[in-house]
Image 1 (cartoon, helix red, strand yellow):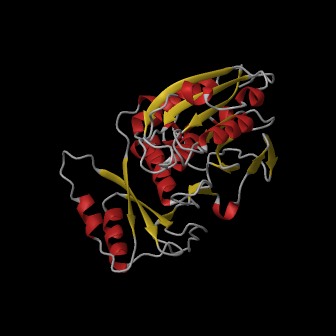
Image 2: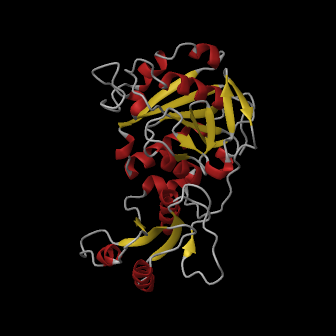
Length: 330
């Protein structure tokens, strides 16, 4: 697939979130309602945006308007289709997405996992967000949005990345790591991809080139999918039992059956013996089990004798997406 090396248009897609939130008081940074301000109004409220665009034409669309805790498969489907539509256009240089912080890492990983390699290995998809609503006395959204635009228009930019508080993270590594602070995201052991400083990127490592490390269902299958494979997350902890796993296996026939389980283990993916026994029963019934870790840093290092597949370094929420997509591709 060939693209115009002089592509200039930037596309901004809005999905809601805190960045589009409103509170009754400018001093209230937590008692707001998310997803109240349209993407057009958000863009008009960014001082100096035209200077960062530097003549690049801008197109915006409202794909969704939700609090990101309520993101669902239908929104992911719509978003993937619109990103695919725009990236495939020769005159589009990149796509920016405004999104809530709560599930931003999941949406970023989902897009990295389903968009065609020829597109995301040639152009950037930049997600951004805010920890304060648009109505705040000192909102962080405008600066984050301006930094995201600067990132998307950087020469050589590619892949799915997240920009927040002047830090650029890859979709594979990013995690929300703080409940309140403006720099709410971390890339764990991998570290940041880049910093945005006065509208310019200081790149710390190479742009993320996507590879087929996991099953990659065709974008058409994502677009037409009506029933997504059900994958649940369970956690190992002190005093853990296997009742939750057993209950999931006993769901009534008219309830969407579970096809996969991701377990957030302690430490290096270790599991309470009672939960481990329940997971063995689930695996014996054809349920795919993937082992991840509760730890924010590090990855599960699998031994040769491991009974369950490991998450290949993915957090539990990202491992769930990877397993859903793998089941969907079968």
